[in-house]
Length: 84
Image 1: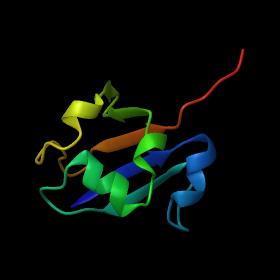
Image 2: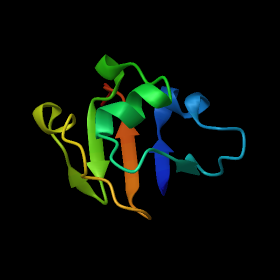
Image 3: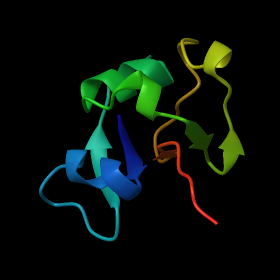
């Protein structure tokens, strides 16, 4: 199935070459967990600090649940950031 993967800050280089504006439509397994997608695109799990599925935060404990993703969903990932 196809979803939109969005990677921000120092993770954006992990997106496929056809990505635009930090996002790309990607193909993932029908029953993939969020961590399976994170691993598929070689995002280090410790760098997947803020994970949003369709704009809703998903905590670390819930990222291994299969079946959360549906075709057309948007998965956005931010690394830990600091600043002021």
